[in-house]
Image (cartoon, rainbow, N blue to C red):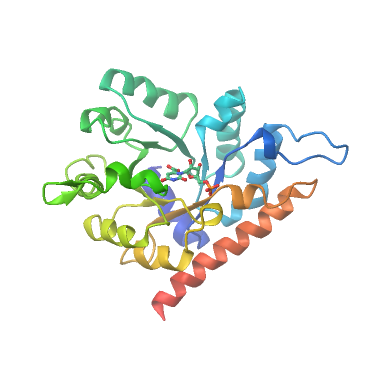
Length: 275
Ligand SMILES: O=C(O)c1cc(=O)[nH]c(=O)n1[C@@H]1O[C@H](COP(=O)(O)O)[C@@H](O)[C@H]1O
């Protein structure tokens, strides 16, 4: 099944635009009753099981697993999601970007080794660095467009001809670069004005929207700025606020409660637009 079809089925079928980000950090892993840190695989698996019915996607962040030498856990977790929670797409947040021949190896890594359904990419080396991923017809790519971090403005907001850099990325992704119909954009919830500008340039593309929760982005403003005319179109990510909602043996219950609260806040924002 195509990535975009999976996403749409989750949006409308499960009534959720929440994405839970899996960013396991050794300093923040919860403790078991005996005081030992919960192993990374078990931690993520329990978060996945506790939140699966609340999400439209999971987004593991590659660097956290790599930094802990836990790439085997990443591979097993992606397989686990597909097996136990079929229909929930996995977006591998790897932010790759390299010349075509190397990009081809990164695409194999993301889609064949880790079994991801979509991957985040940097577009700044140009279309030939994105093309190898598009050869995978059923897989999605999210290009960094207007990122959630303060320094995102350093390059993305520069004027380049009649448009800013991030607007060029949005227009290209919406038009000539979207050759397999599976392209999306990363647009932070922290800049709702630019989120709205990107939506005008890319009316139909799915947006991966990080920046709510720990980064303080406003859910109502983001939903208002980012939904498509059909009222969906967003994969709104929260990582730390959900996965570290608790730090004891009940961490999965705490994560579930936070995920439900966040999903419901997103639903309420969508409903207020229809009212
Ligand atoms: O591509 C991303 O996922 C991403 C893009 C961006 O502009 N900002 C951003 O925070 N992210 C990622 O989204 C997650 C945000 O985590 P929290 O701030 O804990 O919700 C992290 O995994 C970031 O690497």
